[in-house]
Structure formats: structure tokens, C-alpha cells
Image (cartoon, rainbow, N blue to C red):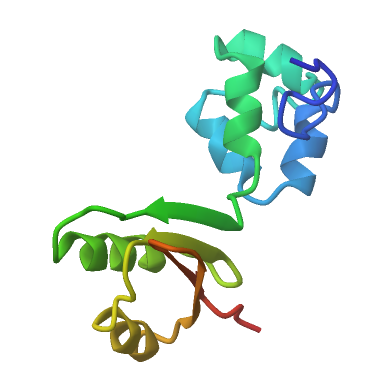
Length: 141
């Protein structure tokens, strides 16, 4: 692991105070781990992780922003499992995020449900036996 980046793009040598100020949600994550952004503000992220008894890699992963793109494979599942799983994962998307689904057929019952929930979607068939559906939750202004 690159000690300077904490494995996920957060500089391990930055202070807790700087991380808390620059990364949304960082204070809450650190508080759950027992890292106080006030009394521990002078500590580097690496020092704070060691003091809290958590690995630097784990702390950096917890501080990283959520992925903007997810993948879900539902090929071979019996109905209604593909539809149920796709809707569950789609509901977890944040504004502007995308879910790429790999299915073995065009899920005609799914499309109106996505439309009713305000999702944008497109489907293609990049190879025989693979239907790819890209589902996006529009970003909110």
C-alpha cells in the first residue's frame, strides 16, 4: 500500500483536521472509529488510524467517496429475482450514479417500473446472450 495515499487517494500524511474539513462525511466516519477531529486534529491520518487501532487502509476506504458506478449480474436467475435485485440496487443509487446490469434477456416488465421511479435507462446487446442495461439516477440540482 502506498503510505502517502492510504490506498484510495487520501493522503495519509494530511492532518485529521484537514481531512475533516475537505472530505464530506469524514467527521462522522472518524467519530465512529473514536477519532476526534478536535483533540486529534494535529495527528496525521496514519497516526490517527494507529491510535484508533484501525488499519490505515480500512480508514482510507471508509473515507473514500462512494463509487459512482456499480455492476450487477442477474444472468441465470429465475423470475422475479432479476427484477427484484435490479430495483433494490437502483434505489441505492445516488444522484448522477449509474448501475450497469448484465441480464440474459430484455426485462420488459422492469422498464416501466424504472420510468415510474424517475430513472433513465438504456439497453444494448454487446454479444449474444448478454443484455446490458445502464440505469442512472438523474443528478439533482
